Each structure stands twice: as structure tokens, then as C-alpha cells.
Image (cartoon, rainbow, N blue to C red):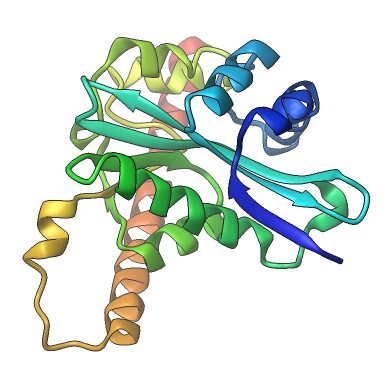
Length: 222
């Protein structure tokens, strides 16, 4: 199996519809997800050099994809739409794509904060290893267009009932300024382990808090 991970270019425009279908399928399985994207939107990202694609060169098969979104005049960057084709899962491909799109984001927007929201513990672990930390939604972009993208998610009522302060997703943020100022007396592996323990603690408390709020919202609607 010969899988190449690269910044997407015009040669990959034909994959746009398949990418959209995979994103929609993955969101349905998770029960959460961003707004459905049109193939034209994905093609725009490819043309702008803001996407990373994984292709099995042996049969020209799409293996995975991820793209960059810009918010608040490039103050915030999101690495969105990560998908791995079912035939190529459990190969560590998701991590490699995330690492490449993260690298591309840092190259194109070195001063931007990179953020994401997710319910996937696997994605949280990858992000944690790259230097993300768990945050409340108030530390993320407040751009209305970003949050409108949550309207297609079945948990949107929870988000709006909390005045966009909380939801089932966990907020994550990479702040390049804070990374510059982090202590140097720990090895990289020690820093990763410490971040991941903090992340898991945050997620446990977050889930407990959301469970209580969701129950309260449900009782109120009854």
C-alpha cells in the first residue's frame, strides 16, 4: 500500500464529491458534525492551498482529507473535516493527516490560534500531543459564521440553551504565544503525558457538567 499525504492541488479536485459524502457519513455515525459541505466548497479549499489529502497511489483511491478554515480575520484557524476512508482506517492515517494539516496551518498562519471542537477522544489525543489544551468555548472564535455551522448537529439545542458557552463537544486550542513561553525543563514526552492527563481530567468534568445540564433541559421541555 503506497499512500501519499500531500497538500491538495488541482489534480485532486475530482475527489471533492467523494470527500463530501464521507464527511456526511462520518457525521451521521458520530451523531454530531459540522454543516454539510458542498463539493464546490471543498474545491475552493483545494484551489486555495488550504487542504491536505491522502491518496493510495496504487489505484488512485482517496484515503483521507482535512482542510483549513479561517476566522476573525485569520486570528483563529480551524483544521476541519478530517475524514479517513473506511478501507484505510486503523493504520494511523488520521494522525498523519492531522499532523500535516497542523504543519500547513503553522506555515501559512504562524501567529494564529488553532482550535477545534470534537467529541472524539482519538482526535483529542492527537491534538493534545501537538500542543492543544482543553478550553471553554469563550476562548474560541466568536465569529457567527463558525457557530452557524453547528446548526445541522442534533445537539444544537444544547449549544443554544447554554448561550454558546458549552455543548457535548470539547473545545481545544493551540496558542503559539503560550507555546513559546512554556517551560523548557521537561522532555517532550513528559509534556505530552502531562497535557493528556489534564485533557482527560477536563473531559471527565465536562461530561459530568453537560450530563447535568442536558437532564435539566430535558426536564424543562417536558
